[in-house]
Image (cartoon, rainbow, N blue to C red):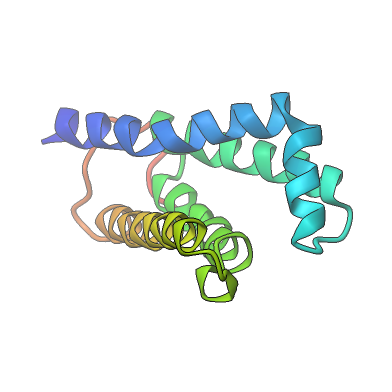
Length: 135
């Protein structure tokens, strides 16, 4: 089961690593979107969030406090869902549907992150970690 848990952590974080790369390589484009959503300091917010999710993903993959790493993704996902994918404010049906899908993806990933947190915060927890759970 330890190997399966490790594979699950790697697969789960793939979306966050891809997103982090986008935050750090397409900062200006993403900052424009963040500015349209009225986020203060949009360029700084994009860079900081990219680093944040990259660090949390690396911690989760490597098994460095995997419970904390999974839990750290929850606020990012909820803020992204409710601030950036607020489909209920969109009038165009096609755009609304796309935003709703993105919202539901983020909410679903939140559930996955919470499940991983519970799995590693509980006892016994899967192995193959560099540093055991914090909680």
